[in-house]
Length: 83
Image (cartoon, rainbow, N blue to C red; front, side):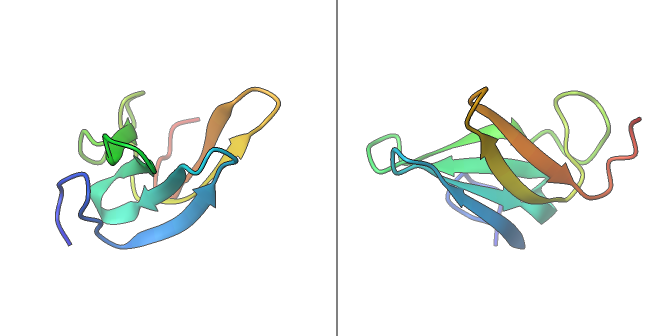
């Protein structure tokens, strides 16, 4: 547990792309982390600014996948009530 890049707090969904990057929905840290096979070893790719509904915030994400046709992450954001 923790909030550094390599410390997850209640991780849920994982996605592994075809270039050996693992994406994790780090639910209680309100972010999605990418783990790489080469340095730097990890990076916040979405959220990480506390829980909320702003465009740079997530609220307990539970899953993440990659839309291969657009190369964009699709994130299931459990408590984000923005419509």
